[in-house]
Image (cartoon, rainbow, N blue to C red; front, side, top):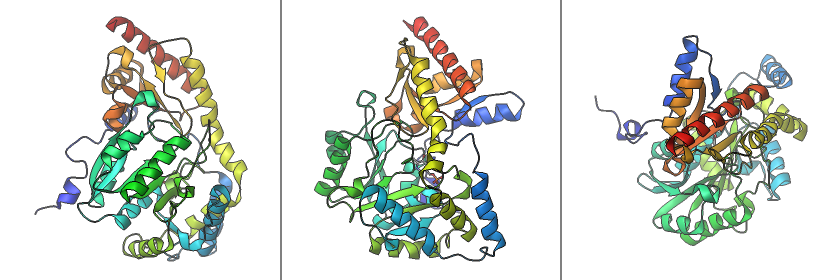
Length: 393
Ligand code: PMP
């Protein structure tokens, strides 16, 4: 039996970029300890108080079908938060609760693309992006960025990619690069969308993790609220990755269509999960800051560990739980470096190439183990790179 072109071409014949991760997991399964600096998962679990709220909600009976768009209380709370933090008036009608940011990304593209439309995304990119765009029936077109620009998309690259496209997907704070887009970058993105009549999908799931500068949402720029769909999530801000709860902020007519799509796909998010998310949001900034604090600390540790050497260059790490390292001075590709580091030192990092060709010769390091192990792993990585740089000089 013939499978659909859509499902068989999600990866477009390429690899899924997770070989180092899979090897590390296999080594761990066979008893070899590995320092895993690969996926974006906190080294803490969901706070007990949030789990208590989940438990209370379930015990109280919120285990039947829940409201498909999201409970009124959760939608109102997300809307108030968005209004408060961005200055853009936002109500319940602008909000759809989704099964995590990933489902929000897919639904947002389903809302604005017809089969065969061209959808833009920025390279380097979060690993699921091209597959998500293809799953929505689109032709995925990458916009290259440069390491020396801190991987911020530039006006000329945006303008070159835009003709004929229908949507643009951006992500700030950025996974995998740790970049937080500057005001100039946000302006360039918004100008491109206005000039080429593009929908903008703005993935802001790391919005509570900013170390330098400020997070700017393009939805707040003049004329952008009508053409922007913002993707949010509880995963990173509240260490709730496994709860699968996120949202889309967008114009009410788009949200209304997306509610129909949710009815036909997920049929909503479990009520006890939504109640737990509501509880977590109502805990306010203190809890978010507590969850972000380890990454802020480890980012400072990274700067200290990389000071005074030339083998590894740190891309300005302004936000999110990752740092991107330029290891081109070693003469190795990101893939060669990552496999060799795993073999020789049992440290697993992601090759830049897993996130697109713009990140070739780089590594993404997730700051997701305790401070002492993190610092030790980084120092080993730097010494390994210095050896290789010396050998290739
Ligand atoms: N966007 C980005 C940039 C991410 O890094 C992730 C998760 N790693 C997601 C979206 C999806 O997160 P979730 O589905 O857990 O909300």
